[in-house]
Image (cartoon, rainbow, N blue to C red; front, top):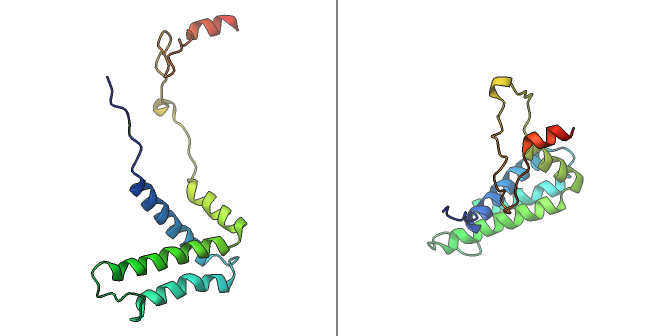
Length: 136
């Protein structure tokens, strides 16, 4: 019997989403179609982090860093939401695609196993592959 697969933890999903937002923000900062005033939002957040004046002083063990992180994340969300939607969609599409020319070489092509007679995930009997060829 196999163990049921558990979904990835929400912490990992949250962290992956923040890394993706950071990458998207970097791309938007370099895009000339994003207005200059919108690009000031992340710059202001970085200035806040670097300046010694904070809502909670950085000398406090955890609280001092949490407010800096919160300001950074809020500014990135605000920056992305105020950027032109079509530019954001274009960058997201480019980030999710892989650039390059690919071809499948015959010897590297995956071979499908013979599955006739087995049950699929929903316990339906899979048709015999030879029977389909006979019908054609």
